[in-house]
Length: 181
Image (cartoon, rainbow, N blue to C red):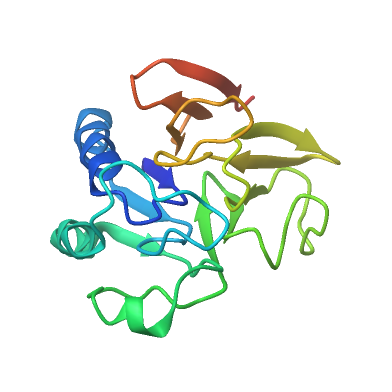
């Protein structure tokens, strides 16, 4: 099973077009969305290619392959455009015999982890800054943002697959990799 992870699209259809091409090129089984889908948020500039209705339509085309979590900028009104479940504050997957905890990052974060075991994977967005690190045996993953990258990072995404967790730029370059032993 291969999961492509995105966070913080913030209404940018232009960024999602690149993500959709990467999703197909990666041959991922599921697209995991960590929130902040349609609204740019009051502290962010409006991203290039801002077109929330068009983005919602493009996401809906993939609705059977989406696993989604609510972000802090996701409103009930915005959600009326989406045809897939997306209002949970967190979710869990089991991949490679490991628990994968999914959250946006404003309620649970690397500084405030839920109860996880060594070897589990904590996946969050919210900061727009990619991270792939290990803390007390828990693998921390943040894909960054494809539309409003911060901290001098590139627009990108993350992958969880059978052999590794990886961060990649939308240009296709691997930024970081954590290989499973």
